[in-house]
Length: 108
Image 1 (spheres, rainbow, N blue to C red):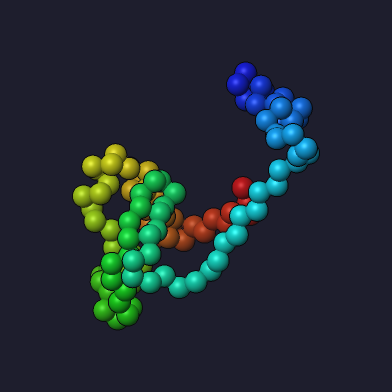
Image 2 (cartoon, helix red, strand yellow):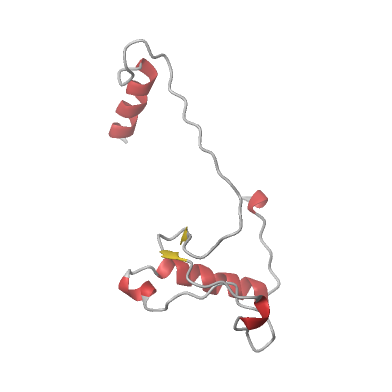
């Protein structure tokens, strides 16, 4: 916590800014587009990969109730990276769907 306070103090005093600069503004730009083969994707849990194949929905695997699968990941990538957060999130999402529980980010 002390390091954070020092960093905030430096920013308030402007110690890290070059001479003649009063304020630095950073702008991030995002672009929405359809994915294509070769695009890199990353999840919230640090998992990442490259799109290798895009198929029509009718050619994708589906669950016994007919629900189509959106994305297929290599199952060996989870334990080797100790990335159990994505498995937990997937299971909780599946359970919420079965229980008809819908959460909106607005409620948090």
